[in-house]
Amino acid sequence: MKRCTVLLSALLLVASALFAQGTKEQASGVDNSLQKILDKGQLVMGLDDTFPPMGFRDEKGEIVGFDVDLAKEVAKRMGVKLKLQPIDWNAKEQELNTGNIDCIWNGFTITEERKQAMTFTPAYLRNAQVVVVRQDSAFTDLASLAGKTVGYQAGSSALSAIEATPSFQKSVKEFVEFKENLTGLMDLEIGGIDALVVDLMVANDNINRSGKAFRILSEELAPEDYGIGFRKGDQKLADAVWQQLLAMKADGTLAQISTKWFAADITVVGK
Image 1: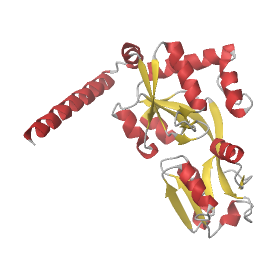
Image 2: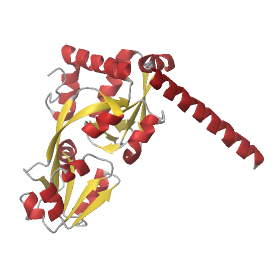
Image 3: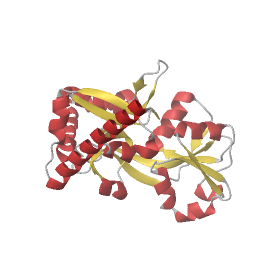
């Protein structure tokens, strides 16, 4: 027991020292973010591994997806290895700030609130928050969901979209929070909820790949942009990643990856 206590104390001291060093560098205005990645030879990408087609596990249990392919190519061009680190999406900012990951790259919506807490690249993909319902339901628009039960993923931009649509928010009887979108879609399928607010990319992918009897309401909640999030002040690392995406746009690699996942180049890099 004493040995465990000593070991725990030592680990806490190391963690405190690392945090203090990071805080000191940030306060001094020194940006060593890119050099740190190059020195350790690895970029740790935080993602939700249940978020198809951006990042998810295939039938072999391997993490794949559009964002995964983008990150692999960027890391390769930077001369470092990519480590895929699944995280609790509801604790993503904490994972980033404690240094467990170097970036959040997984259909990550740029919002003003998030921009205050971290450094973002420009948008590389356009998206929207939409409402998915069962194919056989009578729902036609947001107003038709008055008095019904609607789900959303914890920590996602779906909640922000709901809050930005007060008439819809007030009309719904109950909102149900899910840890993952896929869990919400399963609950929707069995009738546990009447609708699910989710990213358009995720909704389209799930409907197309699963063939399940869902449909998307034509009335969107909110348009949004996907970006890559880094620790606040890690501008050099963010810039380096963005430069690689620009190069991939110029040589056609970005279009190839987008076409693989979406059957067309839907990216907005350089636009």
